[in-house]
Image (cartoon, rainbow, N blue to C red; front, top):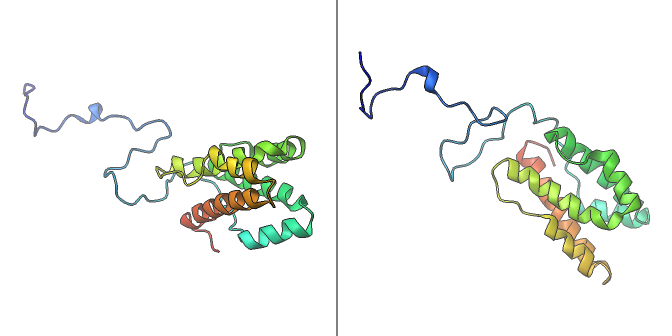
Length: 163
């Protein structure tokens, strides 16, 4: 049998394109709902943390809770995806050069959405709330935290976390 230019002909199995890096093929339909991405990079799901409780703990501990929050959230994101700076490095950066953490954290939270094919609700630029308005009665810091922690909580919920 010879090859033809018949568009209905089924190509032989050896010509099937390989899936992209990571072993997960692209979704068949654009615009449809995305199922949670499976694969070796999906580790444990992180904990949903109440924004109000986190703010209260930050006030009660005179800001030390923020170090714990950075450590835990970055550690959970690293365990879940295999990417990111992780908890110990996040804690070290928070202690030594804390001003960069709002940018790093928002960027990593946005990256969780991006790797699932969704639009980023927060980016590194979200950290500007903290930088530019953080001095004004902490309004910028609160806006940044509400946006970033809210996006992180929504991501964990979309992955099956209770909260």
